[in-house]
Image (cartoon, rainbow, N blue to C red; front, top):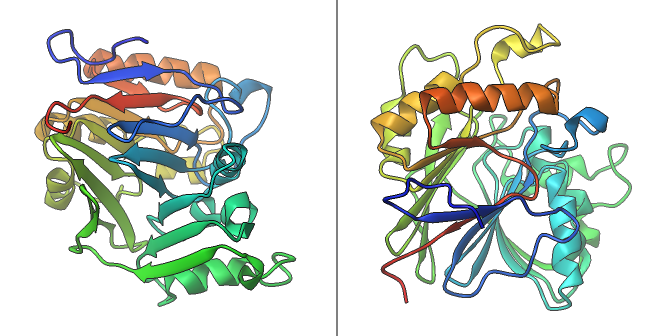
Length: 307
């Protein structure tokens, strides 16, 4: 597998993967990221999005024997199929950044949630309208939006209302939610295990004129920063996504926080594979240790302090 870290600091290995057969589960003493959905706002299937993928946000993290999932966009359906094919009970921790549709629309199609042997711990902040994470997920499954209510899910589900500043210990793994965006009540997450750190920051506030100090602390010293850097507010009014692109902010955060590798995520659904290839070249010209997320891509963080 190709090394994507600098030659002097081989912390990562990477492989493209494949959504239908993404490989075997990570060993217990591992820190592995797999991208199951990388688009923002709406799924973007089609011939010109095959290489990067068209599913909305979902990232699987296998770390320290724990199964973590960040966001439940349409990529969650594919992850669910993969987990069910392993023919063993699923026990996972599902963390939501916020409850915009592209982060939750895969949840009603997550097959393990309908299996009685599944154990799901589900985490999220109070939504901007005051709804708990459980209420937000229930609401999208009520008629006329969906044909099966959440109560038909047979899994053992425990809902956790969390907020920035909490610390969630899962064995040797520490998950810390951070406030990212006052407009959406979105959370970022910092995952620590041994001497390795993942920062997940995918709904930052693009209206700020300078880097949020809170974001710098979230990303500080991270081995990998997953950053919402390829979707500009201008794309809402311009179907081609023209205008300022906030990947510059991702580089600024990565450099200021001494991040080892930056992964840009939540791609504009209007951007084709060729456009994203061009964007990746632009980004890497400014920050060599950067890449754009692709569905099925895995990253292995090699820990030196956990045996």
